[in-house]
Amino acid sequence: MSVALAENSAPITAPVPQRDIRSTTLPNGLLVLTERMSHLRSVSMGVWIDSGSRDETPERNGISHFIEHMVFKGTTTRSASQFAREVDAIGGNLDAFTGKETVCFNIKVLDENLPAALDLLTDLVLHPTFAPDDIAREQGVILEEIKMDEDNPDYLVHELFTQKFWKGDALGRPILGTAKTVSSFTQAIVLDEYATRFTPANMVFTAAGNIDHDTFIADVAEAFSTLPPSTARPTRTPPPQAFPHITLKNKKSLEQVQFCLAMPANPIAHPDRYTAYLLNSILGGGMSSRLFQSIREERGLAYSIYSEMNPFRDTGSLAVYAGCAIDKTKEVLSLTLAELARIKTELVSEEELDRAKSQIKGNMVLGLESSSSRMSNLARQQMYFGRFFPIDEITTEINRVTREDIQRLANDLIHQEKLALTLLGNLGTLKIDRADLTC
Image (cartoon, rainbow, N blue to C red):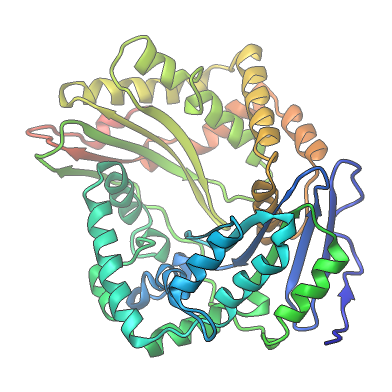
């Protein structure tokens, strides 16, 4: 079959010697990005859906994750067991995941098995049957998955925090959905959501590894020729309001108190994003961070203590997580707040900033050493930025951040009245109020 192709008039980025990245838009509107890594023997491919659980209605909470499961239950040409056998026969790794803002289906294989892998991946994504019997069985599987996660205190404290922090918004609802919503899914609902989400306007296909772009594009165009042009996609909701709250959830069976202290932060494409990553790294992003050294190494109050940025397309949060004994909870909270106050009032040292920069740059480069990480990198940059950022450009931006930038952003983000706190555990008579959150 001959398919006319439209090479994008503008490249995704200016030519960069160390990376060979090309993009092509298929006649139906699907964007395909590739990165050639000729020194590898592997190829990783991913079909990315540019919507996730935050793009669901309350009644259909969990439908993105449900569809992710259901496509593996069989297509018009393969059963679930046939998929498993054929993937194993080519030594491949076929996987999928659902997030707040995306769903991804991906496969990694030896380059010699690329045609077979492409056939498997496209069949999985384009031709699922969503048989009623399979839907009923998978509802039972996901209900058990929900129960399993609710038994995990690390997961549960995150969910409790998120539901209160983004109260009333889809961003605060669980990716898995609830027992009530998952039990309500029918074939008609699944087909309706699939038709809205799996469209060229809401998808990106990326691949990286030992791959020739032109040959690959011809094969992808053939495989996706049955996908009609469509601009349909889920309706985007306005940025949610963050609610400062103090939530104490008693669970007597737990030995530790699970601790989450957080505040609103900037979206993923904000101009201060590199400053935010460095602020997080200094605060609690590694073994040399202030929180790790102060709370674990110097005082032995917690085994796990860290901070993390959670940026989304239009909002975000900066959060500190820890697990500690009930009688140490207030001390851990006080020490955490003291570090938040210190990073606002005192300039970080040059040594701390240089160490954080080296850590982030090192993690970035090391994180791009595999074909699967390059494949993911292409998709995320396209979906959030609409362009590709070379490593040299990112490094330059990281190096440009100053100690004053860190202090300025800390003062922008850290405010007592905006803090949210969630504690989960055998809390007994423990009480926390807003006056205890001074920073």
